Amino acid sequence: MPKNITFEQAVTRLEEIAELLESEDIALDESIKLYEEGMKMAKVCSERLKEARQKITELSNAEDEDGADSDD
Image 1: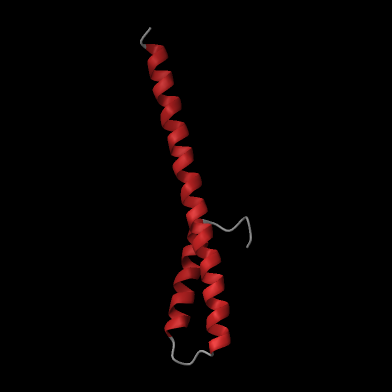
Image 2: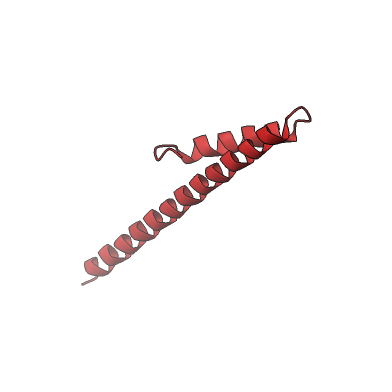
């Protein structure tokens, strides 16, 4: 799984995989490979969201600390 894949790229690929898996013309082995790739893309999305939440929390905490200092 590439580390440099963006959240948006992972979501787009997940959408593509979902469409392919819904196709009636797909072989079982290919379905399994696509499912595995989809799980990896879902993990990428989860990690990117976690990173974003952490960054927002850090920024909010820093803003709160800066605001507290200016009240003195």
